[in-house]
Image (cartoon, rainbow over all chains, first blue to last red; front, side, top):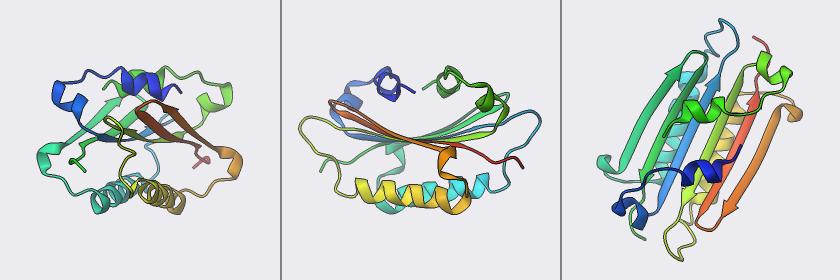
Length: 84
Length: 84
């Protein structure tokens, strides 16, 4: 999976270019008619909880999205980090 | 960020096609000469710990990789889930 190429391919605003960013993606690929493991929502909540614990940023520094298409569901978090 | 297109674009073996999968990616984009936040290794460890808590699979069901290129570092976990 060529993540380097993928993340580089993002359109950047001038603000984003100058900032550090952290991106988290959780993707679930199901087979057939399965609805996915029952723990999936809790697992995602806990992953987000870990990120929140380490990174305190204002709400407008966080972009959150869910993408769905038959069989594939992707939860994405994109955080612009504060200056160190 | 078109994650759907991205994850779909992966080459699949016949075994992977028939199985459910969970994928986790943590990407860090730095600016200039910064080495990244000091909490980054601990944050990643905790994220992996959360995944391990929910998903018990044999070692050969987990693919783990780190990709680096100047300014961008991506940690990826790809898990083939057991049949439900």
